[in-house]
Length: 262
Image 1 (cartoon, helix red, strand yellow):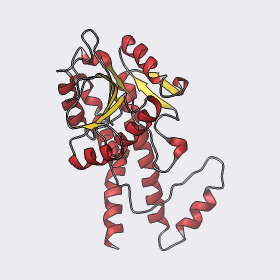
Image 2 (cartoon, rainbow, N blue to C red):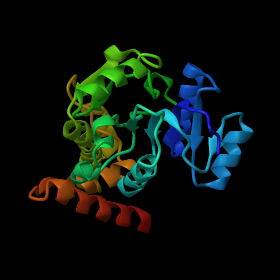
Image 3 (cartoon, rainbow, N blue to C red):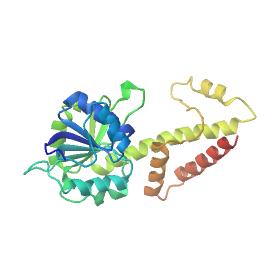
Image 4 (cartoon, rainbow, N blue to C red):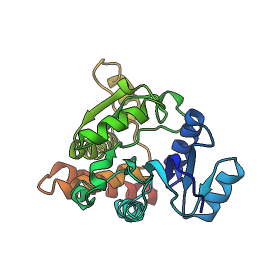
């Protein structure tokens, strides 16, 4: 294991994490940034591309967690808890991952006082909406952590782009914005079903979208992939008494089944 103290360590170098790693290396340099992943193919690929990537978590001043599930994030905290960035200071921990709002209290003191929820926003093949060049939400319940986080983030982005709030709001913002996006698509799917056999939905959609405050989404093969279905499910678990979003989840599953059967 490398004994040096890295300025930043990206934990979880999948789709989001690898982009975070590349951005940080661009801003801070290859000697200051490393990655960690449990997948041998990912480690081999990134090392082959010139990035420093490990299987185990090294010492670092700033950890950026980009793992897939809340459970994996909490496991990372267990590992970081056995490390110290240096003799006196605890590291900062940025959580880019979507996080279960009900598990915030599972992050134990003292690392809870060094944690910043910084949910990712990124669009593939859309450089205007990259990792650190757009508006972001950051949340922490520690003034100490916020002050140090601003110092670090100022090295990699315009900190005026950051909307600061508390931990719960930051975590929920990611879940809610993806749920809202999913709902827009599911509404479009239901409009398409309503139009079927009567009129051409796409022509109706384009006509409606000429109005300045209307933007009906395309209806394709359903709300799939990773983020939107996962966050819609998290929303429904957290806000258990809601009706419309649970109904939307059911309608989406039905739409996908009907689409795939055609």
